[in-house]
Length: 145
Image (cartoon, rainbow, N blue to C red; front, side, top):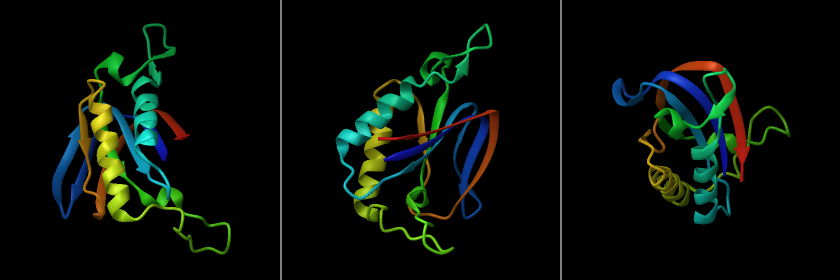
């Protein structure tokens, strides 16, 4: 599994012009599931995301996690994180897990994150989502397990 984790302020997600999810501040997490990933990887990535200290403390040092600051997570499925563009200009997606299995692990990751006491909002798996994102910092971390 691979996650692109961004520290954000007001962030929202819409499908077909309809607001689906929004968070006031916290993390926008784009999650890709790779062929062969399993629930242990979902648990591991959720643990890392929940404890990642990328929010500033009173001294301006990145020392606090999303749970420490009471932030929320907008979890967005994104199979294109496993796009391979090493051959030619059109990416191939053979490393991305099939939709049924990927959706199950995406939902499991959200469940594990909620287990850490975090409010987690989700996108719509497989939909054409429009995301309005206000990056904070900017702070972007890429993590793969």
